[in-house]
Length: 172
Image 1 (cartoon, rainbow, N blue to C red):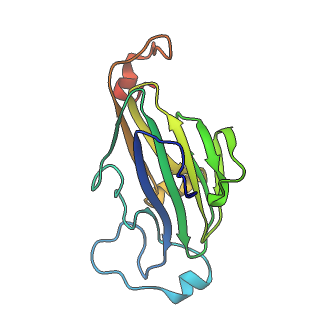
Image 2 (image 1 turned 90 degrees about the horizontal axis):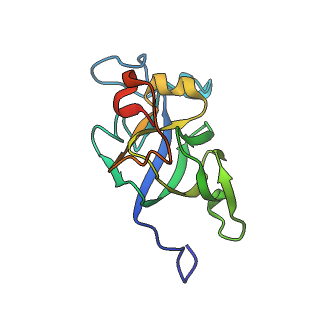
């Protein structure tokens, strides 16, 4: 952050993406050992946010209120894969690519973050619901890479009104 800091926001979260290479397939119970062969071939068994499957939403809740501005400090620890970071149902109001505060991008849907790199995204949530944090290489969600940002509060029909009753609380 610059010495004077970034503009104030209501909530901040720190999220790290990683790829894990084990001697077992995704979802196998029990102890897993590191697989040098899978790492060398860049074939992860797991993709995680903050070190484990379900860390964002199950282990550690990310909760905000309608109308709040959210900042996510997002990094990719790798060791091998890049991320196309996206929050389903949101547009990033500001993106500080690779952590640079010199050039700010606005109104970005998905931002590319290199392995070993980081970015900062700000966005204002305008509707209640469960927003899914993903790498837009969406098949990675099937290996554990998904998080939930839960937005609480009253819906504003001028922002969005669902006509699909089956959508429940995912109707944003």
